[in-house]
Amino acid sequence: MNVPAVTFSDDQAQAWDNVAAMLRGAGIDLVRGQVLPAKGGSGRLMALMGKAGSGKTLLLAELCKALADAGVELVSGDYESRRKRERRTLAVLAPTNKAASVLRLRGVPATTIHRILYTPVYDPEYERIAEWLMGNAERPSIEGLTDEALDRAQASYEAHSSVPAALAAAGLRGSDFISGWKRREEPLDIGFVDEASMLDDRQVEDLREIFPNLVLFGDPAQLAPVNQSGKMVFDDLDASQKLELNRIHRQAADNPILDLAHALADPALGFEDFERLVERKAAEDDRVVWGSRVEVDLMARSPVLVWRNATRIRLINAFRAVHGAPETELLEGEPLICDGLELPLKHRKKRLDLEARGLIKGAQVIYLGPGKKPGFSRLHVMGAEEPRISAASIVKIEKPDTEEPFIPYAARMGAAFLHGAAVTIHKAQGSQWENVQVFAPDLYAAARMGRVEAGQPLWKRLAYVAITRASGRLIWVVRNRLSRPTEPLRTDDLEAPAAPLRLSAEDPQDA
Image 1 (cartoon, rainbow, N blue to C red):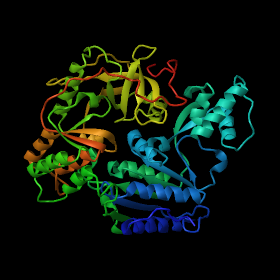
Image 2: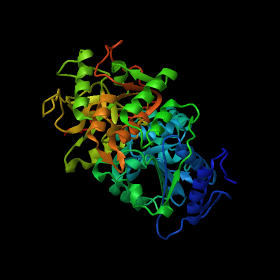
Image 3: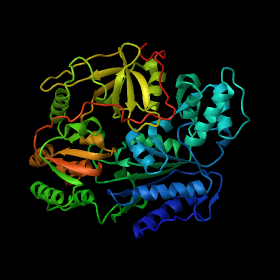
Image 4: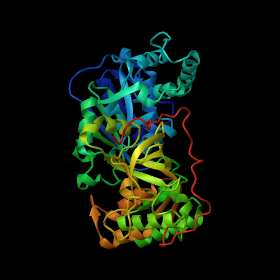
């Protein structure tokens, strides 16, 4: 029997039963551990909603374990064996690399939505190695690869269960064994999507084309996507398709950050009252800090969260100034945010290649230095499974009171970046950091404006999203001041992958 090993609350147990009933209708019985061939018919869609700490991730993880125990195959966007396409499959997805990495750190094997929508096309020669690694074929003999190289690939696969990492361990680059990317043509089976509050209607349509059985996990208290006019994808579902978790579990008895987040639900709570509550929590628990200034040392790895664009730009320029960054170039260790790919349609293959490797809009990146070709940058993509890449880059440094950004250097086309020392709260959704600085004067400005979104004061939605980005310590910054750095920017703290994939400088992204 594939019943969960943990003790669920009543609402979690009800959610488990609802998902189990949906899967049973699709031919998968979690109680008996029985898996039947996929059934046809109309698609099945369900949403499990809950605020921070309500146990959504625990429920998702336990459902994944039960499906794996029943014999359902996990699809990661890594490599899919042709011999297993008749099997029932599960993919755990998140809208961004950072959100997927948060799940992976909690033991849930997640990948990005984009990596499932677009799949790699392997060179047939190296596909033979992949099938061997997965136990579906005999050990191959490949010209140019020694037995020692194949042994390294096998050892890597046994340690990481990643075909690309194994091939890289054999001395191959991604461009050697991945000949291109294509939009997925064949549907999968079951999809679990975390941070579903970030999805727009188009993304849900794309997912429903691929997954006949789709479960959305999300927080209805977060901010709606910018292009959805305050509406979330949950709003269009029937009541029978939705279930909300109300009990708070995660460190519920001893988490001052969650206490603050859930205090915002009180309709009588004003901004000044909330700040007094933050100040009291800070006096009682060092996980909440009443900050008199922005700590610049933290900005290199976790951006200051703001509401207004003008605040974001001022903080970025102050960060660069205190680090003595020259106007015409970046320092190694400066944080960047991917602002999209500036590539024409004829370079669609290259666009898919970069996006599949983590350079999607909103990706957080650390600059490691210039690449081997003019306009190229060596980058560490935060949260990506293979984070080290080299890519043609267009870096934009926005200036206060200036409409056009300053571009210190650029390729003719490639991945566009903004500075990442500060980001808007909207862009921070789906991410989480150990230490989070929230710029309170911006939220005060939102409160003074009196704006309302989805029936709740906008400042409360902004505050909820911002403070729940903190997994360890929340710093509520109350003054427009910046500290001096205690050390120069660094990159040696970034963990390199065991077998990094890289985009070759000979792969003409800017051609």
